[in-house]
Amino acid sequence: MAAEVSVAQLAIERENGATVLDVREVHEYIEARVPGVQLVPLATVPDALDALPRDTTLYVICRSGVRSQYAADYLNDNGFDAISVAGGTMAWIQQGFDYETGDDQ
Image (cartoon, rainbow, N blue to C red; front, top):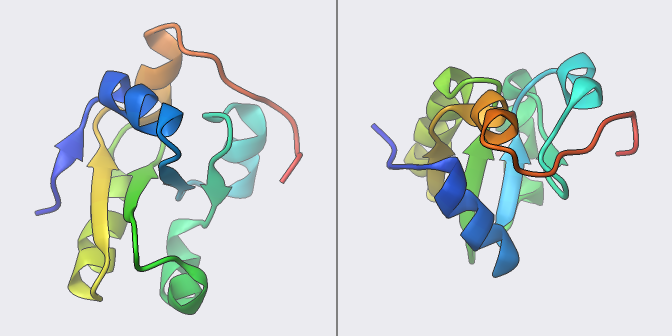
């Protein structure tokens, strides 16, 4: 099972330039997201492997932390260093961190 970080830790990692993958569906991404995430819906993760950086830790976020755990496990099994974000985007918003909305990809 992939390691997890809290949204508070993710906020710190983002300040240091972390790569964050959002594995939710497009409509969820449009509703609300962590600023600067890269949208890679869970079903498309296998097809995206060649486009993802292998030289950095990938922080994986979803709505509540379930899909991100699946994605991080899959990424780790395929040679990436991936960490799931516990609580997901909902926890991010609930803890008062800034977020974006709209379809700006």
